[in-house]
Length: 124
Image 1 (cartoon, rainbow, N blue to C red):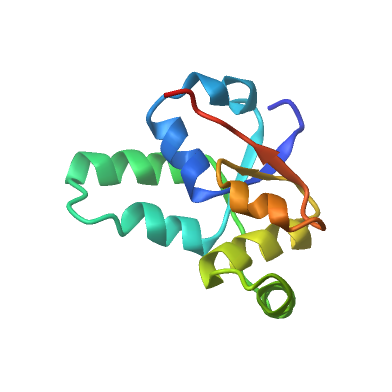
Image 2: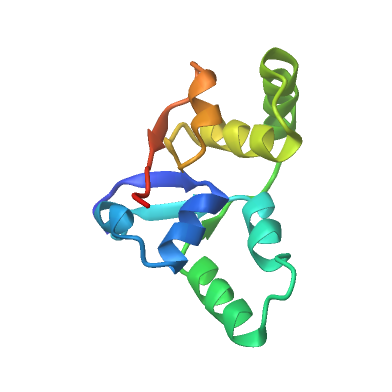
């Protein structure tokens, strides 16, 4: 571990699972995730047993953030101010709560000026 910590958005985990090279600089960092990411990854329709096992193994080496009342309040403020979708607001609030950058490929987060983001772009 290089000491860097990121709150990883679901898409960052998906790109990691797909072995996208853009994530190579972040491999040795500590990845933190929310219950939203866990649900989005494991709730994918038609996920087979080997894919589920791989996702669970990946999540087991990351840190799961436990949701709390302060994150709920921060989520409410973000939804009110930025009209964000609930899952995105929870992830953004969690990043703010931990005071660590959000690792994401979702450009919509760039509109939230009070959020520290590391925007990843996968080349097609």
